[in-house]
Image (cartoon, rainbow, N blue to C red; front, side, top):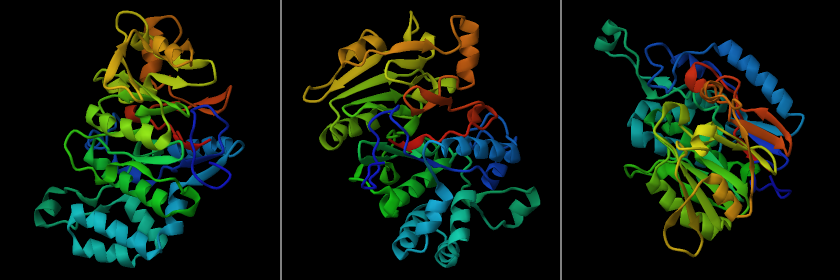
Length: 368
């Protein structure tokens, strides 16, 4: 965050000044053995333990940076008439429920935010009651603690994610509201607004957007982020955010590699943590280079050749060491996913992976 209060991210490793987190809460109770796949989980997690881990993690972060909680930020703007009107309009586009709209209009700010985060069940009809079936007008948000997925900052501009799965659509609205209406989150404008995206095949999530330098962005083309969305934002990154080079990592469709940060994280000025099979040897992934002022993209020999070409030679640190079995085990447990508090000061962003039974309380939305 700049001194003027404008959000600002120019690297993954600069001194962390502020970070946006979400404390896991009752929304996680919606994840059951029967619904876990719908909510993108491989297992269920203990809510109390998740909250305890989050509290420890944010206590550490608070020693280095200002910690902003999503619920607090939302409550601070929830009584603004334009904020209520924004949410009601967007929710009505999907839910088409006048009673829900009336309730959103009248609720006190804490209850209003609670409903947005924890969801609202549909009033059960006779068949639902007979079959003991639950459904939602507003989905609960058990993935909201991955705050960077739905809202990214590049330079002093913001990208609102276009989430791959509909169960996360209200996360886009929360982030757009915060970056539009909260005075602590001023920016120079939106590069891309995924909350307004209606085209099929246009998806973009923040775990695939890494700002390596003010003029250099690394993008992951994963199962969650599409080529169409990248084509849309590449020109805007150049025109609005001052980016000159975009390196693109083409990930395989693999459940363990849903985002770029599952196989790559820059951790200081000279080092990055990587999953070796993705970047070294015959199974390495394709690397593409988009350069301002030049048409199209071109393929590079590998990631490290591309980084050298843009004057950012990084030395890889192998996740899991030299043995393939250990590499696979560590990568499955999000062993590449770190968050740098400042150069050479870092914490694992995931001690367990929330996509695999386990919460990792990672504040992946930060200002430097």
